[in-house]
Every structure is written in C-alpha cells, then in structure tokens.
Image 1 (cartoon, rainbow, N blue to C red):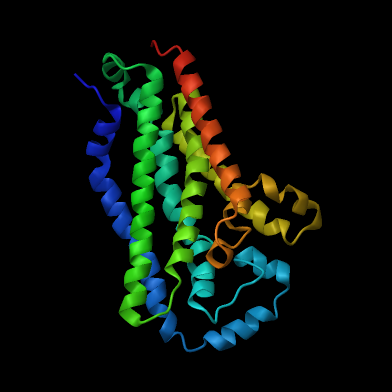
Image 2 (tube, rainbow, N blue to C red):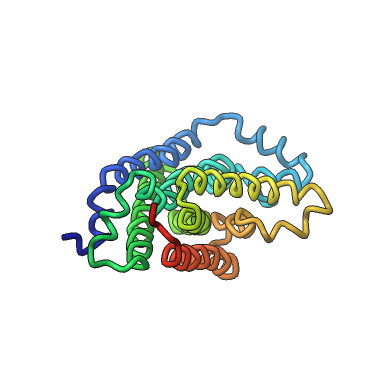
Length: 266
C-alpha cells in the first residue's frame, strides 16, 4: 500500500534528476572555463558599449560588463541557457504531475490508496521542488569547478543568487503547468502552453526595453522578475522573489482545487 507519494516520486525520479543536474552543471563549467581564453573580450566589450542601452538590456542587462566573469556569465548563461535548463524540467514534470497519471491510466491505482487528492498534488509538487533545487545545485557546482579549474575569480555567492532566481522562474511557470495539467488532464497541453507563456514572456521583457508601448507591460512577464534586477550583479530583489513565489503558489492552489473538484470517472 502506497503511503507516501513524495517518496515514490523521489524514488522514481532520482536518476533523471541527477542526470539533468550533471548536464545542467556542464554549461556553467564550460562558460567559466572558456572565459580566460577569449582573447577578443575587450573588442567585444567595446562593440557592445556602442549598442543602445535598451538593446543591451534585451540581451542581458543595461549594466552588461564582459570584462568580468560575472558579466560574461550573465550574457552567455543566465539570459537564456540557465532558465531553459530549469524550465525544461519544471514545466514538463509539473505538467504531468496529475495529467501524466491520467494519460497512462495509472491514476485510479494511485487514488485507490488511502491518500486524499490534495496530498497527491502537494507531495508531487514538493518532490519536484526538491528535484529542481538539485538541478540548481548542479549548476552552482559546475560554476565552482570551472572557476577553480582555470583560476577565475568568480563571486560564487552572486552566482548562487542568480541560480536561485532561475529556479524561482521555474517554480512560477511550473505552477502554471501544474494548474493546467490538473484542469485539463492533458500533460503536453499543459507543458506546451506553459512553454509558450515562457517564450512570450521572454520576448515581452526584451522587446519592452525597445518598444515604448510595450514597456509598461513588462512587469507581467515572469522573465522581468527573473532578471530585471541583474541578480548576478546586484543579488536577489525581494519584490521580484515575492512575485515569482506568488505565481508558483497561485498555480499550486489552483491545481489542488481543480484536482479535488474534477470528475475523473471515464
């Protein structure tokens, strides 16, 4: 008899999570290791300084500084790659938290155990949060190993805060996928819509720096709250953290309510 959904998910997912964490760790290690060997970094920095501030903000931040390893990582890793690595995990697993069980025909077996529906959602979500954190740790370890290997003076505290910001982005959009999966019972619909929201949010945040009429709408993008404060330079912003946490919590609450109320009989 199953007594812990959380434990079952951890048992079923640990190989995938560790493999994804190792894969995610390769990227910061590679970028940090490449940094000292980029001979044209000064020329590239001068070229970027000629760009309008808004255009620089689209690619990373208005304070972009490739003369530092933090600035280089901000542009090469945290603008796109890091959030993609996190979202590829959170959106897919959260979208399939309940909907995947429905599609596989295993939901009846799961709910036949003396476990209320709300616990299924909450415990699966908790397991996915742990998995996402492990992936973040893998990224941080990769950055630390890369910096030690080539002797780069990298502020690992700020790197950690930037990674936390990417995890919060993953939780926010994972919450959306969780809610959509519970509402529709369709895993790939939930994941696909959430990824489209992520892509739209990325471009809204970037283009909002270039297009005047879009600028007031930037705060509705989760990417705005992910990177607008330049966490790799300035650390986490409490307001942005609260917004992303709110996204995740609201998504989780909607998922619990929807899953409790849905008629799952076929």
